[in-house]
Length: 323
Ligand code: UDP
Image 1 (spheres, helix red, strand yellow):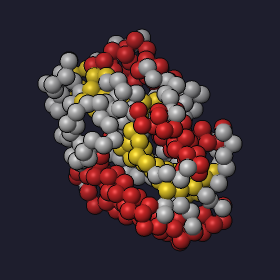
Image 2: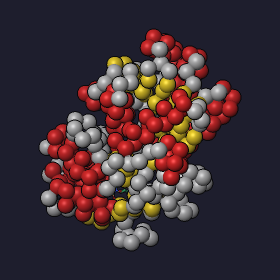
Image 3: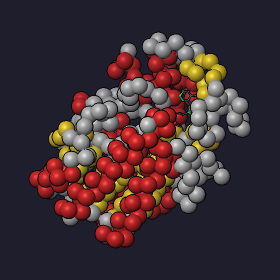
Image 4: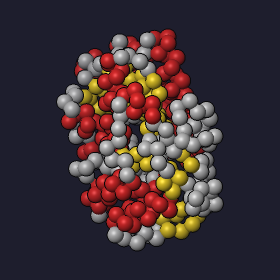
């Protein structure tokens, strides 16, 4: 039995679906502050907060949980800078509560949702896992703090963990019933699709003077279903080998903001109005992953690596949900 915290969220719901399809039994724990009840397609959804340690421990025992996949966290970079307390409390302290509940009940496997934000401004690209970690915002800092906690807990309490450092999660499940729906939305692809749908007049490009081929930021977009698969591989590896590790997850190919907009125009067949705006604070010019470690150690291969397909799946979901 797998416990998925934050399983009603964007990435969590895709992992829940993939786990369910593979026949895993699972229980989702989510306070529904950001997640969506209807996106939990498998398992039982228990509404609750990670701050409730004894309730969590009870739940783990009641369901006979043997492993945890931990998504529940706040994830907005700007907000984390404006309200660090909210991020340290919800991301770091609440993870400590979750780990308490796990240790109390003897559960020692956890797959943790980390982020490329742990690297900060990269010194070299593509970024491998041994690259220095110097986060430039509180959000990235909280993810790194949790990685450090996991590392120490692994040594002290025999915890086994995999920390997955996602680059830019994008796209939606092929059935288009689950996908990206944040309120407020701040991510590039759903915002661009909002323009295509006429829900938004135009997209603002955050900075056109970066040291990149077209002056706009370059990111490594990875399909959410490929991310989902990686979680399952990581969990299975923890069961089989018990080795703890940190893995990057990206496609190793960078696309600029302008290229994303052009791709979305091709996919949707709509003209997407864009205006040039100022840089967004804390945005590195280029973030591209080297994901060789997870490929080599876990045999992970992206099934949906091209940007056109990633945007097309996002568009199918977006039209269905918001059109
Ligand atoms: N971006 C943009 N306009 C927007 C939202 C995002 O130009 O309205 C850019 C942003 O600066 C970054 C890229 O798009 O370079 C991806 O941003 P997103 O917020 O989707 O993901 P992040 O890279 O912050 O994880």
